Length: 595
Image 1 (cartoon, rainbow, N blue to C red):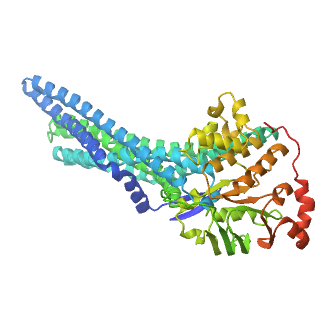
Image 2 (cartoon, rainbow, N blue to C red; image 1 turned 90 degrees about the horizontal axis):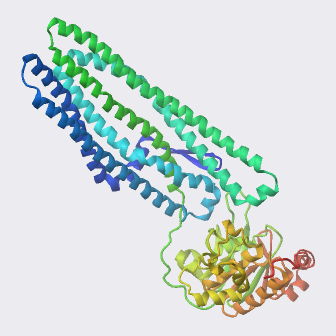
Image 3 (cartoon, rainbow, N blue to C red; image 1 turned 30 degrees about the horizontal axis):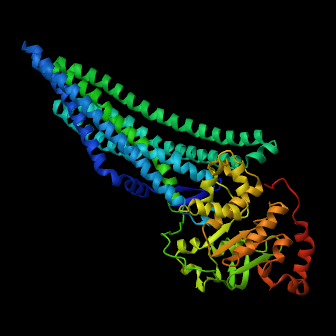
């Protein structure tokens, strides 16, 4: 398999054998249901094949002057039986197809939500969403109708050809000669259908990517007057999808027209040559009538095979994209088995880290010790590697050198669920999910009761906000918390982290959008929490840093110094400069965020 990059998303090209293996993996759990639907379809096809034979008997009976009542009843029964059985088979296959799509989506969603963070950062979210939605939809036809059509169509074709050969080998040779010539030429367009479909799906993925970007920064789009520009980008991707969709439709039309042309030319050839054979007495007229009926019935199995080939070409592009997403590296998560108790100790031992081999290192021999309860602040210029410390503790990333220890144990030796269950983490941008305020608070602690929620609300100074909201905790906060202020979102994120009752609390610039009153309240809360929890905070505000038990000064991916505020003011020039400039410049100012 080879891959390339397009719009930031990997595009896979699977070989035929890889495609069939992936197809069978989706097909296998439903193979008995597909077999049952195929059986009904075959019974319907067999009843259809019996109809020309009944018609031949009818013509012979008319020529001999016998009664035709029994034959007419038989023909009617064959038509009704064939229609009923094929309808049941079609329903079974359609139901199974929906089950295939459901299973594929459940598997893919579970896979994507367990992606390692570096994998997610390398891939466009909109493209991944497209694989879950539009690509899995294409499995509906290729894993059931395509497989069944190929099987039943092939068997029906062989049976029809065999019966036609029994009736008259000469006319069969004429028919096959025309059909093989036209259908052989049609097979040449199948790769073009696959290529056009794949590019159309890629363009659909680009549409999702651009829309996800625009909706994620909707206010910025409007404030920048960028609606027309973003619309143009989406329309450009939509036009590409339209163009490739038309190209696919064009080649599909060529393929289907070729089938009709083959049958029509065969009909004319058989009618002419067959008429001559009837006139010469080589075959009776009833044989010609039955042969012509078989010729028309030949349309259906050929069409089924053509449809199967077309659906395979369309579905192979979707399968390749799904397969590519399924091969992204994921984390192995199990239910937490226990996280211990009391504050957690954190040690970095000569830690090195870089995001990619082609990027400069973020950490170069970082070492420090956080013995337990208390507050440790990380300060330094932008890009010093402060936030990456938290990412390594959470194992969002793996250190490329050295060790990260929690409670004396390498984080790589911790069960991932246990490690993260012991940590409360407040991200830099304090994300709030669409839904109610209650859903956001209990997101990390779904078993929390009302008493615990109330205590956390008071601690995070959210109790007054809840009283003001029209529906209290059941108030919908909007997409990404758009109905809350920046400071309110930060306090929701802090409350969510505290509700987990962590042993280790990571705060990444958790006060950046708080007003002076709420920042002071948060400082008091952190001081209270730090008596029983290890608190690590990345801060740019002097007021937050001065109260820390220890301060780690970082610069260019290294630890320059560790100490208290007064010790560092006297001993470290960089810290003194930061305290005099950056920290003071970020000092709290009055805002409208006060509850």
